Length: 288
Length: 186
Image (cartoon, each protein chain N blue to C red):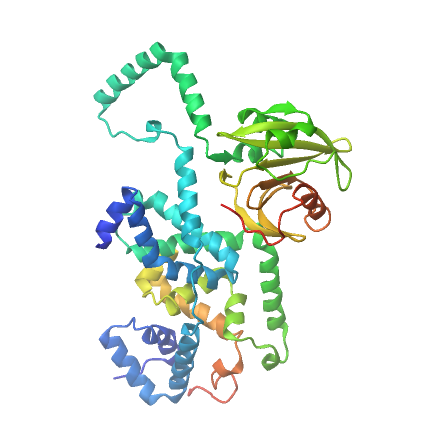
C-alpha cells in the first residue's frame, strides 16, 4: 500500500485524536504513524494539546443563577396580561365569528371594560417598565421622564412632603446635587399599591438628571436593553446604558435608588449616588 | 422524565420541568460561558439570557439536535454576540494587543502564554470551537449544530483553531519541527 503524503496525514491527525475517523481511515493513519517518526511526533504534540485543553479547574454554578432566571420569567409573565396573551388556533370561519362577536362585545361594554382593565393593570403592576423611558431618553429626556411619571399616576408635590408620602422609602432629594444640578420638580408616583418618589434635576441650559425611588419588591423591565452589574465609586449596583445615558440602580433592604443621567461614572456620578442614597451600603446586592 | 417529556412540560410552562432542564444543563452552559468570557459576572448574565431565550423558544425546538446541543447553540450565540459587541471592545483590544505582541516577538520563547491565557487571546470563534470539543466533549456533528456550520467544515475549523492556539502557547506544546529539530523526508 502506498503511503499517504505527510501533509494529508497531518490534516487528519486532529480527527484521529478526536475519534472521528472510520475504522479504515484510522487503520491507515496508524499504519503511517508507525512508519513516520515526524508525523508520530506531530500526533504526540496534538494529543498533548488536546489533553491540555481538556484540563480545567472545576466550575461552580452560582446559586443565585436559577432564582435570577425565575425572577425574570415572573417579570415577563406579569407584563403580559390575562387572556389577551393566549393564542387561539382557530379555523378561519371560527375566527371570523369570534372576531365579530368580540367587536360587538367591546362596543357594548366599551368604556366600562377599558376602565376596569386599566385599574386592574395598575393595581397589579408588580413590574416597573423602564423600557419606554429608556427608549425615548436620547430624543427628549424631559418628555420621556414626564411620560414615565404620568404612566405611574405621578402628581407633583412639594419636596418637603416626599418623605411623608413615601414613609417606607429611604432616600434624599436635596435641592442641589453635587456638581451643580438643581432640583426642578418632585413627584409622588404609584407602582401598583406602593408609593414611589421621582425627581428631576437640571444643570445649565439642558443637562438633565432623574432620580426614582421605589420599594425593591418591584421588578424592573428594561425591554431589550441589557442590565449589567456595575461599580460606581463605592457603590455596587446594576446599570443599563442607552446612547450616552446610564440608568444606575442601587438597592438596599428598603429602597431601590435609580439615577438616570449622562454623568461620568468615574468622576461625577459617585457623589450623586451618595447624595440620593445616603444609607445605601457600598456592597449592597441587587434585590431583584 | 425523558427528554421528550421534559420538553413537553417545558412547553406547557411547567416550572418544575424548567427547573429540571436547568439543573440538567446549567453546569455545562455556565462553564462554557465562563470559559468564553473569562468573567463570572458576564457568564452569569449570559447564562440567564440563554435560559430565558431557551424557555421562550422551546416551542420552536424541532428535536433534530439534542436538547444539550440546542442549548449550547443558544449559549454560543449569546457569547459571540456579547464578545463582538461594543461593550466588549476594551477586552478585544487588549486581546488583540497580546496577539500583536506575540506576532511581532523576535524571542518567541520569552512571550509564550499558558493555556488559559492563550485561549483567551484567540478569537471568540476559535475559542468556542475548541471549548466545545475539548471541554464540553461534543462530537463534530454536535459542534456543527452548536455553532451553525456545515458538519464537513468542523475538522478544518478545528485544525486552524488548534494551530492558532499552538502559536500562542509555551514551548511545551511545540513539535520538534517547530524547534527546528526535524525535517520531513523528501
